[in-house]
Image (cartoon, rainbow, N blue to C red; front, side, top):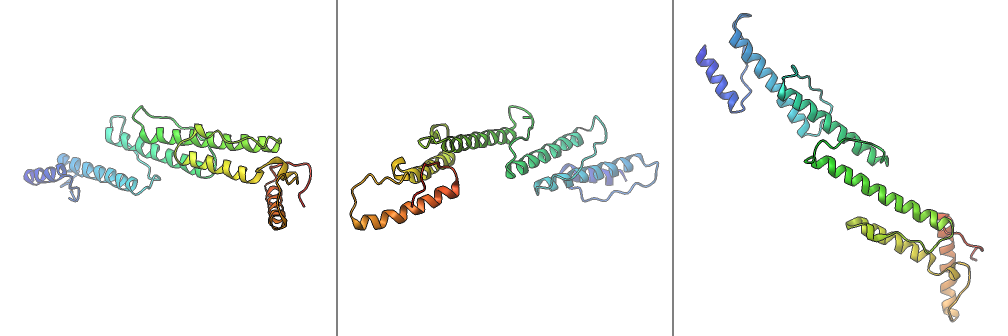
Amino acid sequence: YLQNMASIAWHISKGNLSHNIVARSDSDALGNAFAQMTEYLNEMAFIALSLSKGDVERDVESKSDEDVLGNAFKELVHYNREMAQVASAIARGDLSSEFDIRSDHDALGIAFLNMSNQLQEVLAAMERLVHDIQEGRIDSRVAVEQFSGKWYDLAMGINSVIDSLVIDRGFLDGKVLYDIDQQGIEFVIPLKRSMAAARDALGCIPTQRRIV
């Protein structure tokens, strides 16, 4: 019996939890202890496997306040669940979710915080731009120097779109400020109408007259 328990203990030390331990009786202290231990370790292994597959809905019940492994897994599940909820909120456009950075080494939490802050800065810049244009300040642009990477590219792209729409205030007001021949007129008039339609659809570039 002791040799069997020793063999099982050796396999457990190697991470093998496949042994089914059945105590000989209710008074078999060693057998019952080994059975409870392997059952507990299998529960923790199942939780770890679920987390590795992205499942954050598994609840962990720690055995006691001294259950170091169980409490650690409980905190891990709670943390991953919280991050999943924050990610879902961001995907819906909700940047108001608050969460705690667990430590200076919380790489995921810090990354989420930086992402949320960056998105808020981008949205704030877009809102300022739309407000300025609606107020008639069509020379307003996104301050691209505050962004980097793809955010910089996005800001530059938005500025380019605004540039292409406004081009020149006099042009939008229906004033052709350039000498063009009849062929040029045939090109410019449809272009002006297309730009007017785009402006009206966007509803964000005020002018005094409609382009016809």
